[in-house]
Amino acid sequence: MVAAEKPQKHPTMQEVVEELKRMTGIGFPLAATSLVSYLKNMVLVVCMGRLGSLELAGGALAIGFTNITGYSVLSGLAMGMEPLCSQAIGSRNFSIVTLTLQRTILMLLLASFSIGLIWMNLEPLMLILHQNPEITRVASLYCRFAIPDLIANSLLHPLRIYLRSKGTTWPLMWCNLLAILLHIPITIYLAFTLGLGVRGIAISTFVTNFNTLLFLICYIFYTRTPEDPLYMPMLSQPLPFPFPFTTSTSSQREEWATLLGFAVPSCLAVCLEWWWYEFMTILAGYLQNPRVALATSAIVIQTTSLMYSLPTALSASVSTRVGNELGANRPDRARLATMVAIGLALLSSLVGLLWTTLGREPWGRVFTKDNEVLELTMTVLPIIGLCELANCPQTTSCGILRGSARPGIGAGINFYSFYLVGAPVAIVLAFVWKLGFVGLCYGLLAAQIACAVSILAVVFNTDWERESLKAKDLVGKTSISDASSLADQTVKQEEGGTDLGFLKEKEFEKCC
Image (cartoon, rainbow, N blue to C red; front, side, top):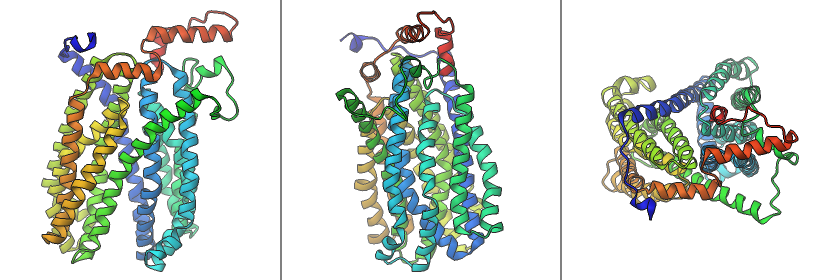
């Protein structure tokens, strides 16, 4: 009742500017990392094209298949640790951070085993679906040699989210950039110098990710301090080898259930949106002129992938900020972070609209010289720009829901928006009203509008005081002083009661 009657405090301009600095400090390196990753994918496609049209077609099929069945699943499952880590760091309950990181790694490794079995059997699966045997053979070859990449991603995704939850994002950018700089010569050497072809390209992919992983691990251990979340639990009690994954007690089963309760909806929210683009590509193959439609679809997907870097960075940064502030029992600051993030999302979406409208012709010529494909591309890119007006706030709002431990709402909204609104509209406009690929793009626009309106309504009706109380129940502590006291006691026990002066509140700020 007290929380309900508390008057809402309006933020000052100084508070808005400070929050803007925090948000951009987290988000800018993440956006740069996404752009670097986009460059990596472009290198893969260019190298496949240099090998030949068969390799390009097979590689494209393999990349689409691995995205649908593997990378989207691992990325979505890993996002389940975001609310736990960000809120636990905000409340300084570092043991939850460590256990969540370890359990997420195990969960992704188990999922990777099942995904790897699917990748191993891609060829018979595609032949059952009457795919071209030669293209299927190349795609199957790529998938088999890319299986180690599942292990790399199972470790990379949790480590990235762990660092991001602390607001430590610049190392992510530098480690990724260094790995990508090595990726280009490694790919050329394996694919062309050694003559491994598609196998070499697949190998270079997981080698690059393992390089990124190595750089991140070196950074974490080089900069690790006694107040670091990965270090502190080890002071109080030794961890069983390799991790405390046993679920023999009811409390451990409840903790696993909580993690899975966040991971599964987060995975569904990511996959439902990723899969819709593949669904649109499949539908494009049934249009009257499939060659032009599929070529345009490829350009559209490359365009949306590039534009997606900004909303993804915003989504991740606001998830961290909201989670940290709710965990620290500061609902007003969580509300402020939400408003600043949505404002930035609207601004970046306008930039996307201007780019796809005013720069559609030169951007289309980057990918094709075919007049038919170029004409259709110039027609649909302004529609994709309108999609971005809704997509950026929607993606950012998904981060707000993850930070406030409500990923299930985002999954439900994505399902009905893309499959109960967008898919029927796309099919009717493309095939019944004969609008072709333009109709499919209007279907995407309808889905994005429905999704944005629904998710923004949820965000603007959020009771932040209530979410702060939920965070207290979730991570156990809400004040810095309580957590600092616990940390001091932990160190005293380990050192035989000696008071170590380095565990003070200001030094706790270093890890966050």
